[in-house]
Image (cartoon, rainbow, N blue to C red):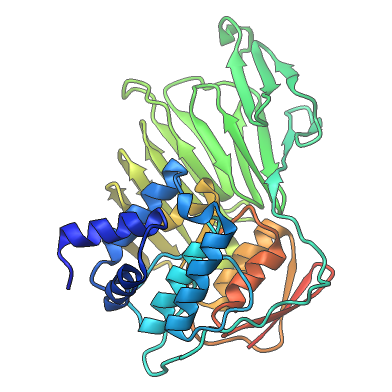
Length: 408
């Protein structure tokens, strides 16, 4: 095995497209061994973040490397542009991951979770070239004011949308919603409540009157007052919402009432100043609170649980069983960062996320039993996502309008 210094040299040469043929062989052997997964992943992520990808700027150099690697790995690839997160699996999939990384910087890697089957080819069964384009979701939401007025935010002009007492409601140039108290809020004896709702295929960000921010995922809602009065800051949610809560010197706790789609309360999440995610889609079969920073206290009818950063509390809708899981934070907030993140997910869990984001209907003719892990950008159209999933050679899709049919 190469030394740490040698592997860093190979990684940097690989990222800058300066590997010789012999060095490329050495690099691929090291990737296939599985010993440097985290080192490689960290270097790749850092390079993507910096935008420094000289090795893929020139198509001729990129395709030269592509043909070199596919010849070495005996890989048949007919489509898709995934970005890999290299996993310790069998050699062919590792080599394929490197190939796919060389092809694109806006991509995904998929792998089959299987122990008894060694696949010598990674083939793609592409969706129909004439399939309709199903665009990804975007900033779409409605704001329902206390008087019943409904504002469609995705078509509303930037600027002031409404005045509620001393509180001005504005839509900013970046599309987000801003609540700002003009002077003091004493002009209103009682704060008025409004509801921000996103449809399937929508998401939206709002800056609340206390400076806290909330980002709503598709098919979600957030009910909140025009300003926070008293000792507590209370809001209620359905669906999925990510919060960055402004600290109020420990004297004004921020309380999120988590509800199912019918409006029945599931729990209260209490914080002072912290970052966390709440997911409560009925169809997922459970709801979860995931803490990124700070501390939260989750109170259900049966118990109270305090979470530490990196922990996720999951509660089953059916059995009410509660469990605290570690290391789920990256997966939980992937949608906020602009991508899907699946970890040993079955096809139904994968397609439920796609249904909400692309506002599609999914029908199953035959469902694959194997599971999927990987990341996919949320900014690509649905057809591209389906092609990426088909890279597993484990599932096939057909598209009729906005209906996606799943087969194995």
